[in-house]
Image 1 (cartoon, helix red, strand yellow):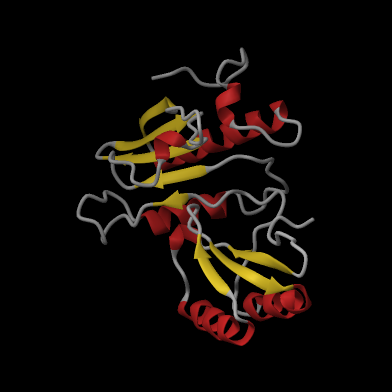
Image 2 (cartoon, rainbow, N blue to C red; image 1 turned 180 degrees about the vertical axis):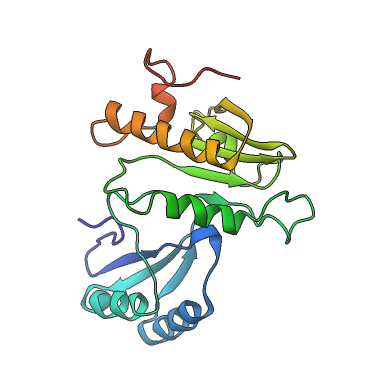
Length: 210
């Protein structure tokens, strides 16, 4: 079963990935046309993706093809997680970085990664207010005036946990290296899926709290 399509009796859903929460106008226009044609609903997810609901199974292939032709990518097993990002600078007067650009560089760094195990979530915040939930994500990146803070092991849900800060005021290159180390560690220690919070107590965890 493809997790991008949640199968019911006659309909399913399709999840379109939106890096940095941005919805390209061409895709938005096509989604509008498809929604009118097939009577779909549009749901904007908490992970900043776009989900088409009530997609007739007979139309799934056509809808995916029409969106893919415009550059749309879809949720699928093993994909590197797109960071949930706040709007960042210059659109927020508190934003210290362009979160769209930094998110793109994170995704470019890991574009050739063959497979990333679930259930990792990344978040990127342009300031310490952490509007994107950086402290309650498996890996959280927070911009400060002197570099990046990196958090690991946060989670939401019924038993939320605040992540552990494992890097303080580091460069972007050091931040990217920390993400890679964390994901490689998660991959070694995980069978199919696991939250990073469960690995904080592992004796091999690669970072101390700072």
